[in-house]
Length: 465
Image (cartoon, rainbow, N blue to C red; front, side, top):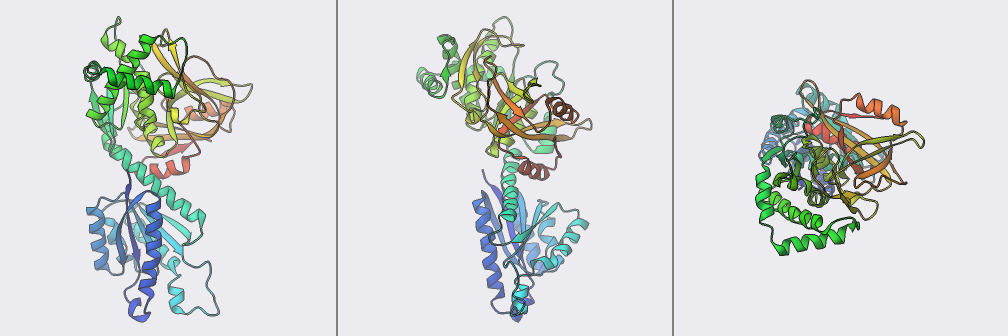
């Protein structure tokens, strides 16, 4: 999926007859901007060089019609704010004002008025900012050079990448299979809130929907899924063949469920009873949901819808996004052990993940195969989507490091993570933000981009550090 990025340059029509060739020169600079944006994953919707209030209104109609996710206002030279504001008022998309000067500095001895005007992007930026502030337009300013400015273009790239993820969130369809784990008050979710504040669609699913598709799984499909499992995982000797076969059959059913309901993510839990069909289905989900997560369809257990959406955000940034909670504090070596039973994002595993056979799932009914791995060593980010007392969604994040070393061999994903604070102080600060007890764990330091995503989604991000 790509974001639709509206791009318009600005100039003053009065300049063109006074300075022949200037308009064409500035249009060339704008093409540089548009080409760079395409390279950042954006689908450019160009309104060209806007130089009159009438042109501004036409550009605004274009951006509204094309449903752009972000607008880039390239300040090519001086322009009055009256020909800028109408472009952005109708679509209500966030705006990035690009103050990118073509030359590093003017040649003060030889530059004439035309040369100065071709480099005077800074001149009207405060005027534009004033107009946007009065009109309550969400905007940011990026100042720098048009050419060879890694910092400025890195900032623009982050905004464009964030716009891609924002569109993915707004257009996502998340399946909710079963119910939330009883008693986990932090995880209960108001589906309408997700529709209203994020634009995500929540598709309520019954276990019967899955059971029907699992029953229809053919021998060839199951065989292919078993072959995939043997290729992807190191399968421990304690895995009973019957449990592996059942997990493969359920995985085929999950693939059909995802396809039939056009799902971008899935959260699930069902308690079951006395070994009945739904208990057996619930116990067989881990393999299939791990493979779905690796394909970019994040699956979160225990009916944790908010963490599923956080995982989707992390995945669309290319960071992974594995279902995680706090396991233990290590005061000797100064890290926090984090992981979870159930599916993980095996694309960010530090080695070939292991399938283990578990005679019981702690706190859950049934038995079967489970996934064990740890996240690659190096920089990591954790992200929680939570909800405040007044009903507003809120992101909580932290950047840290995944450390080498042994982990628990209990058929769960778990990793040794350090966050720049002692374990006790980090947990204190994290907890005071009211997060859910689960979060999405991804590789790399991603909060700069996630902060821009939060701005585009109009929800706050708190960084714990």
